[in-house]
Image 1 (cartoon, one colour):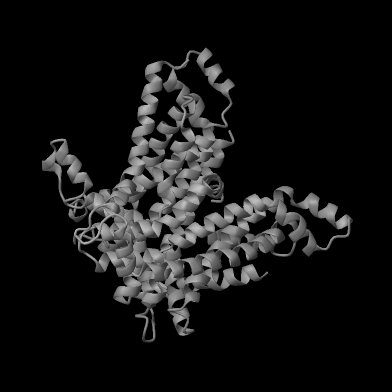
Image 2 (tube, rainbow over the protein chains, first blue to last red):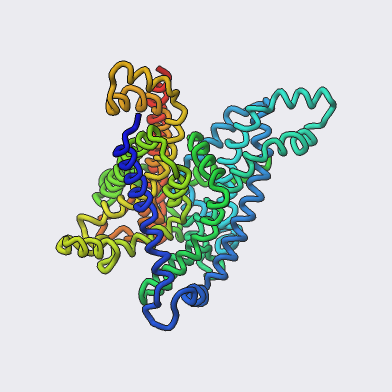
Length: 266
Length: 277
C-alpha cells in the first residue's frame, strides 16, 4: 500500500523531528564536554570543576532528601486515601473528592504567597519542611486521584470476597490490594519523584539559605553568579538533569504510560 | 484521613488565605489595609498586568496550538506508516518533558545567545543578517520563549495522539479507502474525529502549562527586556517577593487559578460532547 518514496519521506520526517527534539540537549552535553573557556579543564574535568564551584553536591543531597521523603510520605497517604475513596462509601466523600480534584489543577502560584507568609510566622521558612510539605500536599492530590481510579476498577468485588473470608480492612489493603496495585504505584512513584525533583517555584520562595537549595535552584543561581563562559554551566545543567533522565531511560514505558494516563486526570 | 489533613493544611487553607489576602493592600511586614476589589481592578486597568495576561495568550499559541497541529500531522503519518524504530522515536521526542525546566532554560539561552547555536546555523546557511540576540529583542523575545514551549510540548502531544490513533480500528480506514478517500480525506473523516478526546486532553495540559510558565521565564529573561516577556505567574513572584505588593500578587494568583479551572472545564465539555456523538 505504501510506496517507497512515502516510506523514505516518513523516515526523513521522523529523523528530522528526533534531531529537533535532541538538538538543544546535545548542544549542552557537547558544551559540557568541550574545553573550558578559562582553559584549565576539559572533558570530564569540567564536571568536577562545576561540582566544586557550584556546590552541586550539597544541592543534590537536598534534592534527593526532599524527593525521597515526598515520594514516601505521599505514596503512603495516597494509597490510604485512594483506597478509602475507591472502595468505601462515607459521608461527604463526593465533596471531599472534588476538593482533591481542585488541588490537582491548582497552580503553585495560587498558594505560594500566603504559604510563605504563614510558614514564616510559624518560623518554618528556610527549613527542609517548607520545601517538602507543600509538595507532599500537591502529590497527595494527584496520588489520591490516581490510586482511587485503580482501586475502583478492581476494588469492590475483591473487598467483598475478602470480607466474606473474614479479612480485616487493614489486612485486605496491605496484603491483597497493594500487591495488585504495584504497577500503578510504581508509575506514581516515578512521576512524583520527577515532579518533585524538577520543582522550582516552591524551593525558590521558601529557602534563602544556600545549603538548603535544591538542584534546579542551585543551577539557576549558578547561572546568575558564574558568567565566565558556558562550559561549566553546561556541566552543571547535565549534573542536575541526569538523575531524572537515567530514571526515565530505565522506566520509560512506565513514564510515558503514566504521563498519558495521568493526563486524563484533568 | 491523614492524607486529607496534609492536603488541607498546605493547599486548601493557603488557597483560602490567598483569596483573603487578595482583598488587602499588604506589604508583607506591617498591618494590611482592606482594599476591596482594588487589586482585581488593577489587573484590568494596569497596562503592565494586562500585557502579562496578553503574553500568556501568545504563549498558549506556542505551547498548545502549534504542538497540537504539528503533533496531529506527525502522529497521523507515523500511525499509518509502519516504520521501524518507533519506540526509539517515542523515547526521544518525549525526553524534553522529563528534563527540569531550569535545565531546558539554560540550554535554550545558549541556543539563542548572540554567539549561540542558532546564530551559528544562520551564518552557516548565509543568513547571517538575521542573526541577533534573540532574547534581548523587544519584538522577538516573547516568540522566542514561546518556541521553547513548542519544543518541549510537541513530543508529549505527539505521543499522546499516537496512543489514541493506535486504537482506531483498521476497518474504518479500509471503508474510507473503498469510498475513494485519499490520505487527506482519510485524515479528516477517520483520524481526526477518533482522537477528539486525546486532543482535548492535550490542549488542557498544554494550555495549563502555558499559563503557569514560571521557571522558564524566570531563568531565560526575568520578564525582560522591559516587560516584553512578563507573564502572570512571574508577576505573582515579582510582586509578592520583590516589590512587596502581596495583596496584588495574591489577586493575580487567584485570577490565574480561576482561569485555569474555567479553561479546562470548557475544553473538557467540548471534548466530551464531540467525542460522544
